[in-house]
Length: 318
Image (tube, rainbow, N blue to C red; front, side):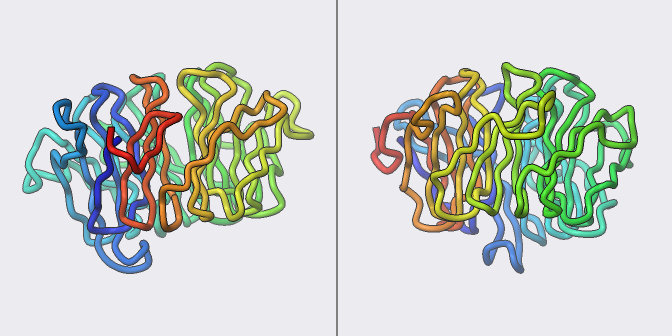
């Protein structure tokens, strides 16, 4: 399956919810420490199977995360290291972009996530310890959520409830929120170390996964949060990203600083289904296609984007 070389270090990858061949990739120069960023829109060529760049957009600072709009097929949001949130329209040339630049966070923006239910709003999470709610038609944020005591690394919408989201932080907690309430509805001391990522189960509205510096992925039932439903140990370094499958209730994908991508079935006795070791540096972004079951993507600090079908070697072109 195809791979693509990015000029900068990969940070995030997401399949389009509209086109099965399209991906969005966020990258940062110099491992995101200092330098520019670039947002790539890539297409899988149906004839050759190769990944080709449709558009790319430059930023003065690194891009740490990106998300496609759930309502406009060419619109995307990027989380930028200078504290800005930028909206891009892939149907327009770079000279007409970004279509909006939002400056409210006081530190690096680490996460962006578009509401899959209401589809008109998105969340950003920042190292300024806050989460902000935005809508496309407003030049300022709708609401700011401040409760975490340290950097917020991710804020992710529930796939079932339009007003519910989860956030995770360096303060070792995961929190569940309703946007209509300024305070969180659940504080979950999910790990003893920083929590870098979370995701909601697409089939169980009470199931949340968390990924931590402690090298583990944990699955929680928010109705009974005293102990995890599953503790998935198999990575050898911090787990940077976790994603639930859009097609199978108990399947997750994770990536780690150990340079691997792992697939899990958290209900199985032997939970680790597959390990992919195709990257040669930290793997920091993974995704699973909503439109094509089993189609996976990853990106990392080795300046590579890979797209492959589960069960195949990502390094081998089909």
